Length: 290
Image (tube, rainbow, N blue to C red):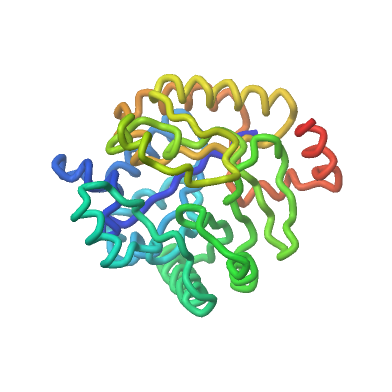
């Protein structure tokens, strides 16, 4: 089984990839629509974790994405954890690009407000509640999962673990399906992430099983290899492919090649990972790690 996921951000967040592509005058939402069309071409389901401000500020452009029967919409915070003015000023003065999001999820109270705003706009735009979530930048703290569970979120995909092949239930009650395939953004040369940038960058995720960066072609080969290995073991392969990264790297060429391969297997949404949560999943994951 393959759970294809992608993260989508509102243009007002001005991420490094958005700024890199700004001269082309193409929005992340427009790129996401092309991403979804490709998924439709190969009949591959995808879960898109979307910031609430995308739904609030760019709904007319984004609505066609939600019309696809292959797309599940999940939450990705409301505001996207924007960097403060001081960090942005230091970045401009130094000439070095800072991370596009804050390294803190905020106070418990601010997180509750952000989650509530995300859920409210999603319900209003989609006419149904969302149940899946990925923290923006995988940034969370000890309060985050309790807040999400209390608000009605059931599925989370924040962890990085190549050895965990089946979802598991967390103490807070959420069902976690970790990214167990090499993710794209922090392992891919694309947009601003050239060799010089990567050499300056500190490893952002201590629990990430790998630290190297690759060309889009080499990255795609690694993804295909890992997905096939997980399939052979009967696991759920959770893949992260950002629409913006796939477009910036090579105009979706590698993504389309991967979708052709994914179409040979069963694809599921994040909200369907519960079907693979069994009493044996903990033992299964432990055996996979050995």
